[in-house]
Length: 433
Ligand code: GDP
Ligand code: IMO
Ligand code: MG
Image (tube, rainbow, N blue to C red; front, side, top):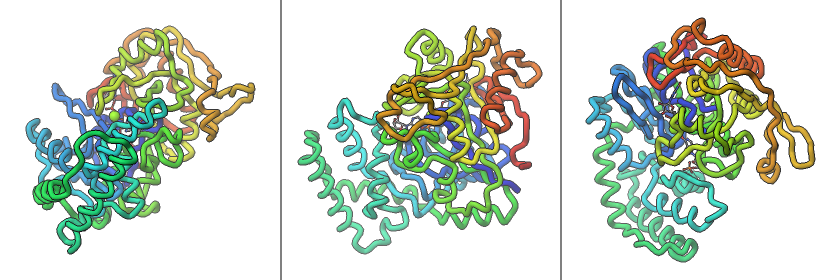
């Protein structure tokens, strides 16, 4: 029995979906522990492409149990849509998808607030996905959120909805200068009840269920969304999401104690990408950045926005190793670098005063003005696409991977060489940890 956490180590979109799907074959239970439908996790199986937003990426294996943990924020309508889309692709979630009764809901006003605020911030916007994530977590922490457990069971539930809708309408109209139609609380209430009744059979005490699975001796996989530097505490604040994306979040957001965790894997893209605003020291606004974008098809799985691309940043990753306590690395998208003649790795930053930093400083004003210090290596300039055997990789690709391991002092257990399940080199069994 082993319980494994999978997290994104950069700014999201590292390929977590593919890695979770791959490991889900061995794990009986997969738990998403934070975030909402801001996530877009792509899994390619044979000729089908699945993009999971709320449903854990383990759902594609027939015998898995998939849990939406208490740390998530759930847009009910989007969840029902996702379940239906999966059904149309031949995947039945009923009986296998379970939702924590302590998870909070994303309400229609959260989405309106998210978008209206971003418009108001204009040039200082965060570049959110517009899915209502920030406002939903704010209400959770402010103790004005709505949890699955309280729908219908609360005697003053309708009154509560009336009050929340009224308050949010006032903010939208008078604070955010929102010009669109305001929400009708009766409509919000009726729609919520209708959707809730469809989803009610999926709701459970997920922490207890996970505990039972652990006692039965099954492997549990905790699936993170976003990435370490989008974490609300440890990321490039304020250009972050509103949850704890790091491994510690798996315990609070899954309802399990830290003593139950056996291994923590960081998914690491072989270069770096970021969607939305915020500092990105190794960003490449040149033909190399364009090559990575083109070869890696770097467009957001949720919003379709172009992802910003840049070199691998070892300073960033060293911090990710520390904060997550990474025991394993899964390096993805190696094949995207096949055509590069020279490859750079960022090993330090210099600020505007010429001072060197070995980790990203916390001050936002400094983060924006860092110049990367690079070491370079020769590229391999041949195809690694679909390679499944480490020994078949070109020597320079192996040198690059070895350098990443040496810099981060964490072993690589998976190398991904393409988007499909079979495009993978497996070096170690993480469940044996
Ligand atoms: P996630 O949010 O971390 O699950 O990542 P996304 O699904 O948003 O983005 C990763 C993208 O890269 C998806 O389109 C995957 O199909 C694709 N992908 C994953 N691993 C590889 C790989 O090793 N090589 C290539 N070329 N594509 C990959
Ligand atoms: P996955 O799980 C990449 C980014 C947004 C924005 C910031 C805040 O697919 O890796 P939010 O809507 O969360 O309030 O937006 O976080 N962001 C992501 N970037 N991948 C994601 O998820 C992301 N989820 C949010 O672009 O910069
Ligand atoms: Mg993604």
